[in-house]
Length: 561
Image 1 (cartoon, rainbow, N blue to C red):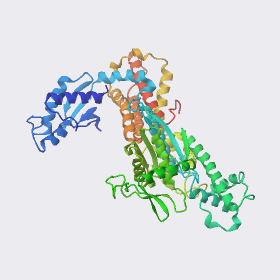
Image 2: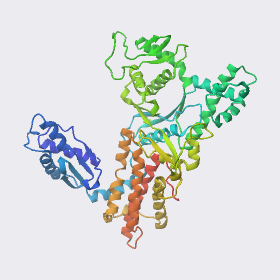
Image 3: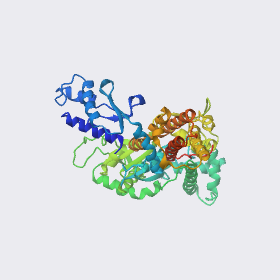
């Protein structure tokens, strides 16, 4: 039983002893300020507000305010508390704070060492499956830095879900069909046939187009085909060439996919899905096209009262008979749910926000559970070099490629910087800071903590941590470091629940900071062998947790800097 569960059990028993039946409204959380304990609950406040608003007193108790109720609850908690708590006390406004005992904290060091790489592994996803689709970039050009932000977000989320017990499939969707492929083919044709004067049909610009055209012409002979034939084949070849380039870039980012699905391969199943929706009466014909209209129910006679199925009319087949990307996406998500996924997660740029309610409506219309469908929207990235904002790339035309940034700063800095902010916030990526070998570069700061620990062990030689006397670890720095180490499993749980992957970088930075602070204040290798072994055990636990965190982030835990 973890400490949160222990607290919950104690609280439920205390309420039962007080004759209070409703124990569902309170929260247990870690306070932002460690001076307020390791855990805190608002139980007295929550119960007092909910029950006394209309029918005081709470559970038959005569209490004038939440603090009085908190005192009564705390008296019972202290009678029944286990040895893991040093003290339980009332704070202001009816909050109750729980302080873990030093003995409990010290014992956790041995537990971390014993579990090693499995520390932080959970079973909340046991026997569950999840699919995570990310990047799925526009196939007509190189992967630009904006779309690349979704790569580390999706990859780290997949890592965390696996750590939480899920079986995860990492997916990439190639949009290799539709007007943009023809447009790319026309661009290549008119790039090669420059004397035709078809500048208006060059839809994509940049040096990459000329290089791409040369590669395409090595496979498709422009002189043996009609313009229409060449445009079609050139577009098809070009997107395959670009896919390989994009996948090379994602691999350089540390990303490997389990499956790559092509839109062209989904097209064959679109008529069947659309026919099924037509039979349900939620596809209608208008202006020669077919429209997905989920608010129309067969026999319903009008609007359905459903948050997902209102005002979501979208074309699935154009008037020329061509099926839309949305139609293919319905098939793709149907496949995901038919695989038995308990979570279907898509990582999209913020400009795709309008696609979410349409997909929710389609998923619900196909009788799948839309609550299992999750979308993370990320904002785009600005690239800076110090104070200078970089606006464009000669190679790409009007955007900066992910490869350019990766080549300059490397995989580890690239991933760490991309993960430092909430996905929904805009971010600036400072190239100079990312390359800097100093403590103000966060990824260097974290990796240096790990390498510093490695160098201490290289100097100390072998140690038998099974004989370590953890009771000797009493300094403020040792206790603070230990308190933070044991948070790691809770962090894995939180990220697996709300997908806030940026919390991992914050955790890594703070853990590194606590280690550096400990190292600056306390000597590790001493004449006192017993204390030396205890401190080395603490560093071993720190090394394990740092490595486990960096593994989730997909960042190399460098032994030497």
